[in-house]
Image (tube, rainbow, N blue to C red):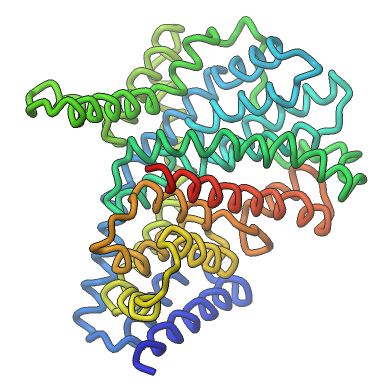
Amino acid sequence: MENIYPLIIVALAVVTLLLLIMKWNLNTFIALIVVSLLTALALGMSPGEIVETVQGGLGGTLGDIALIFVFGAMLGKLLADAGGAHRIALTLINVFGKKRIQWAVVVASFIIGIALFFEVGLVLLIPIVYQIAKEVKLPLLYLGVPMTAALSVTHGFLPPHPGPTVIAQQYEANIGMVLLIGIVIAIPTVIIAGPLFTKVAQKLVPDAFSRIGNIGSLGTTKTFEEEETPGFGISALTALSPVILMAVTTIVQLVQEIAGLADNLFFEIARVIGDPTMALLLSLLFAIYTMGIARKIPMKTLMSSAEESVRGISIVLLVTAGGGALKQVLIDGGVGDAVANIFSGSNMSPILLAWLIAAILRVSLGSATVAALTTAGMVIPLIEGTDVNLALMVLATGAGSLIASHVNDTGFWIFKEYFNLSMKETFATWTLLETIISVSGLVFTLLISLVI
């Protein structure tokens, strides 16, 4: 019973959180803090410990990701407002042509998705996809499913997105390895969940593919003439610059390890440049030049865009910090140890276990980030002393945290409204799409675990 008690408390905490958010409409951040305090009390922590743990969880999480959130949001906003993202999408569409239009949308969404938050990517791409669908006389959802699949996969698997970056920091995994392996997993996952799943979805809910879409739900969206936008090369380079910096650093570190080279100033600089915060800062400065100064856009206009982007992510930052507080309570309250004891004699792979816990929490809580953070708190004690690949643990946790998005997830409602779908159609498209991404991510992670 001693081992089970902390898990009963976690179950009650999840139920309480759901009631506070869904039944009583309490703000998610406030609900997370209230549940963190109540959970800590129920786990027998002293008042002094509780305050210290909650503050430590909040501060530690914000300290790790605040700058990543802010720089990432600014970079994405500059790229969008300058028309760079628009140019990437249109160029790839022109190159691929009408017959392979889905693949053009997938590649464009993948490139743009690396630089932009999921919601920002949707707002940016839907008007473009809407226009393309109209011009080539295709259903909006026929292009919308692969677009959303690419955005969701990059959001769930690839740094510098906050979710995988935060989980990598919690597990103390090499961020560059998470990125490189994440790309290997992301590509087949996008193909399965995008173009291939679209064919299945058309048979499941054919009426959904006759919808015009609710373009008005986006509010006012900026439109560009092609000559107003920056070139494709510079736009793509700006969007991918943080990924390039992190990937180059990882390759340099691998060469150093394989060749057994002694540490020196060059390797030290390479490590600094590849740190997610520094990579995003350098990329942001690059974007200020390429998307602004080089195009004679006043600095005041650029900084106005940057400030607007930060206002938009403030609640996301708070919710993530609240998830960090709950995670710390679970660690300090002994929940992770209780899980470790239960599974101590189990032969279940730590990768599969991380995915399973994240999946259960995702279905219960709605927030992928909160589910992933909470999972890390529960799983970290389990993997101490094991030789499991930490980058694969990050990707398995990220995959689990994406599964079965439904009514308690904002993404569900965003997709429903943008594509003007019924509840049944949203479950058969969006919820199933997210589940395919999650299961595919797990399968590919397990396959890679057999060879590294």
